[in-house]
Image (cartoon, rainbow, N blue to C red; front, side, top):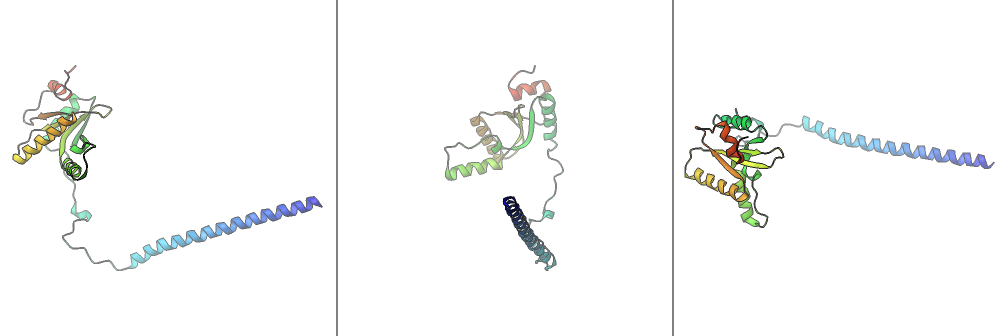
Length: 193
């Protein structure tokens, strides 16, 4: 008789567990259907709704307001890039690098002055940055470009930033690129092996 009672209780427990599992599964399925209907019902209603009025013509956030540039490097930059790649195959060469990726603002500086310097760094780019294989900066390379007093001032400030950070700056005249043999010495500061 005890085994019969034990079997009856076990059967009831298994039945209750199955019933509870099915009830919870049904609740989860109903909640899932409800979320599905809510999401896709809104999408369907939005698709059937009339289109909002067109944006004013002066707004430039649409994809049509952008176009691809023809080249990443200009006609004066490409030969120097190729020369750097050929003479420094054991280095990584990066083009058009933001100055802020090479130098930073001192930690102690805060407030408006820190923001002003960060914004200034973000506006300036270096023509090339040469790194070793572990991506430590070896040198920044800039092409000498004719420009007005404002460009000369910006060039001087970039040089001061790099010097303060301990980064070698190499300036190259695009009309007279250095010989391959001399380039490694200019950039790395070491004789060509």
